[in-house]
Amino acid sequence: MPQRVFSERELELVKQVLDSGLLSGLGGGKLTPRFEREFAAAVGGKYGVAMNSAMSVLHSAVKVAGAGAGDEVICDPVCVFGAVATMYNNAVPVFVDIDPVTHNMNPDLLEASITDKTKAVIVTHVWGLPAQIDRIVEIARRHGLFVIEDCAHSLFATYKGKQTGTWGDVGSFSFQMSKQLGLGDGGMGVTDDEQVRDELALNAGAPTFHSVAHGLHWNYRMTEATAAIGLGQLERAGDYIAGLQHVAAYYDAAVADCDWITLQRADDEAVHTFHFWAATFWGDREGLSLDDLRRALEEHECNLSIGYTQMPAYKHPLIAERLGYGRGCPLDCPHYKGAANRYPEGLCPVAEDVIPRILLAYTFGDEDFHQHNAERLHAMLASLS
Image 1: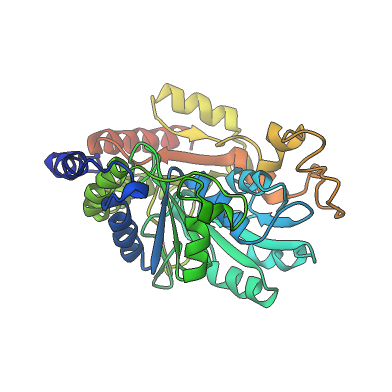
Image 2: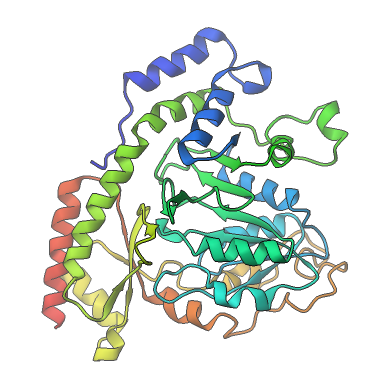
């Protein structure tokens, strides 16, 4: 562990789908609604809405929040996906800087970014570490804002004893193959609000006379076969998470004596579930450059990535080059009268400084590999000291 296991259990569940002849929940299939119920219960939520990807959940959640042309949605700048979901809805992403240790949205900076155009906040629990979601939700509630939690990295992560995805209005979980519950593709929206569930569900089926009567929606449903595999994998998910936490401990030990690497951690009230093990490099304070680190990693054959995308979300070409639907939309939509659609250098100074310094180890895979990789990391750090 942690190695994904697909076995007779998944085959048994998929065979149930094939034997039924109902390969879609829309046509009466039973496993998609069962997966929705069991997944929601597993993360501590009331309702689940299965979709074909977590991006589909984020897109739909922004629509449920009521954000559209002329509106703003607050996002964090490490991962671009909240901004993408915002732009899908022709709204404008507004970025709030991060904490340099946790890499998550800094709630101290949130309120200053709220305007009369703000409809929602999308907060990512990045790498699997919960953000200070209680504070974010409290601020959002005071301003009447919808809260969307991007839990693509944070399956079963908890903050103050409560699972991520259940603090806000919608939790969005990813089942893309690299994630903690990897089904090839897929996603799940979780909510405690029945009306929100119903509005999300309008996007989880083919357009019908009923759904079209409620407005424009999308066809993002999950297949019965994916749901069947999801049910089998959900039975193993707790073991996967324990395995990822076990692997992360190897890397923690490897850097324990290095005072210029800071682990991505919060206080004891935040339980990390390690889609990635992450840390931050501060070797320049000791006269070491990132190029020095890269050379040392290569020399010691240590598999660790540096810098993630190398840039905050607003420097991605999608946003920096103002790409989108054409005719200026979404960032220069004629309905938008605000000033937050410009993204200057220094907009999120902590993110701009920290992102190129982020060290990442992908935690799935053979345990022996990670143990030896962590040993190589430790030897590499010793060679630089």
